[in-house]
Amino acid sequence: MQNHPIRVAIVANIGWNIYNFRLPLIDILLKSGYKVVLVAQEDEYADRLRALGCRFVPLLHLQRKGTNPWADLQLFWELRGIFVREQIAAAFLFTIKPNIYGAMAAKWVKIPVIATVTGLGYTFLHQNFTAKVARFLYKWAFKNLNRVVFQNEEDRNLFIGENLVQSTQTALIRGSGVNCRYFVPKPNFDFAHRPFVFLFVGRLLYDKGIREFLKAARVLRAELGKMVEFRILGALDNENPAAISGSELQIYTHNAEVSYIGKTDDVLPYIQTAHVVVLPSYREGLPRVLLEAAAAAKPIITTDTAGCKDMIFEQKNGILIPVQDTAALITACRELYYQNTEQLLAMGLEGRNFVIQNFSDVIISQQFLDLLLTELDKNG
Image (tube, rainbow, N blue to C red):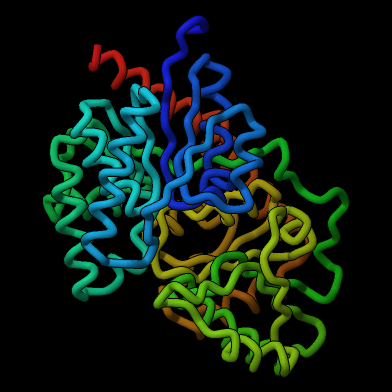
C-alpha cells in the first residue's frame, strides 16, 4: 500500500465541516497508508486541510440550500468526474447533498461508498415540499449503496421504516468522535464561583432550541440577576430557513439577558469556563458539542430526543427535558444552579468517563476504518 497508496475521498459540503468533524478519520487513514482526497466547497479551512498532507479538490457546483435540479445535476457530474480523474478507490460521504449526489456518482463509477447521515435537521422536522423531495432523493441515491452509517438508532429506524434504506445496508457509529486528550476539565474549576454560567454552543437555529434558551435566560436573569449568566457561542446562519435573525438576538443582548460571543475555531476555553452546557435541540445525529462538554467534565442539559438523549448516561451526567419546553428548561437550570459543588463535580466526571469509554476519536475513527476495509475487501 505504501508504494501505490489507495486513494480515498472524503466528501462534504464545505471545508469547515471536514476540518471540524473529520480530522480523526483523516489521521487514521493517513497513518494506515491511504492517500486522502478531500472534496468540498473551498473556504478558509481549505489550506489547513492541505497542510495535513491531503489533496483538496474544490467543489464548484454545490448549492447548499438550493433546490435547482440543473445545479444538482451539475454537482452529480462534477463528483463523477472527480472520482474518475482522482482515481478514487472508495469514498466517505457527509452532509445531505454530498450524500445524495456523491452516492449516485460513486455507484455510476462503481466504487464502494460509505455515506453518513449525521442528523436529519430541518429537512426531516418539516413536512413540506423540500422534505418530500429530500426523502425521494435519499431513497433513490441509497438504493443498493454499500453502507449507510447513522449516529443514533432513531434515525436509522426512521430511514428503514420509510423504506429509504434496507436494514442490511446500515451501520451505527455514534458520532464523529472527540479528542479526550484535548477536551479535558479545567484544573481546579470552582463550581461555587458566581456568576453561574450556562453556555449554548451551536448555530443559532430555532430547531437547535435557541429560542427556548433565550426565553429561559430572560426569566432566570430577572429572578437571579448577576448571579447567573447565559452565553451563546455560534454563528448566525442567515441562509438557513430555521435561523433566528440578528435583530431578534439583539433584543436579548441589548437587555443584557444573554452574552453573544460569536463563532470561534476553539470552543474549549468557553466550555471550560462555563458551569453547564445547554443544548435544547429538537433533533440531532449525535451532538458534537455535548461530547466535548462531557469530555471537559461539564454537566449538560439537553432534550429527550434522537441523538441528544444518547448523551445522558443514566441521568448521572445531566438532565433531560422535553423538546420545546421552556418551563422544563428553566426548572433544569434552577436545579443545577442550586446543586452543591460536589454533586456538579461528580456529574461532570461521570460524563467524561462515559465519553472516554464510548465516544473517543480513537474508537470512532477505527470503526470507520473497519467499515472501509470491509467494503474494499468486498470490492476485490
